[in-house]
Amino acid sequence: MDVRIVVETTFEDGETQRRNIGRLCRAPDNLEPECLGLRIVEAKNLLGRLQEAILQSQIDEALAASRICDDCGKRCGVHDDRGRTLDTLYGRFRVKAPRLRQCACKSDAVAAKVALLLPFNALFPDRATPELLRLQAELGSRHSF
Ligand SMILES: [Zn+2]
Image (tube, rainbow, N blue to C red):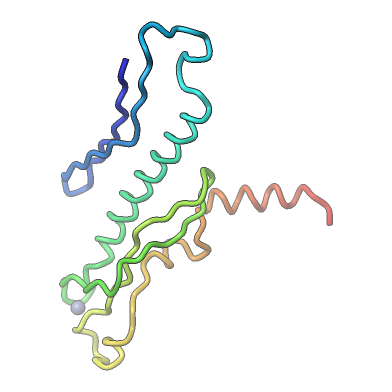
């Protein structure tokens, strides 16, 4: 048996994206109890790839919206597209999050050339999801120092 696991994402603009996140192969003649269903290593691997696919899709969509200038409606240029680290409940992930140039229509043209917009930092100032931060605070409050 061959199982392919695919994530299909449909964005607000109607675009659909498919990502293969895993594949499981099971021999038809090997029906031993330890080979039924997912093993813990396979489950962790698939969960990590699923989290990574969902994170990147959400960040891509949010950042695409933040590229539109509020004043003139043009798209801001991308300064660089290096990855950023994001800690989640399911591990640490590296996501693509571009730094944007400020739109040329801004009044202070000199500052506009230098200033960079960091939409990823605005979304995740602590480079961690709020769910993880809340859990860490709760667990930390249970321990005495
Ligand atoms: Zn503008």
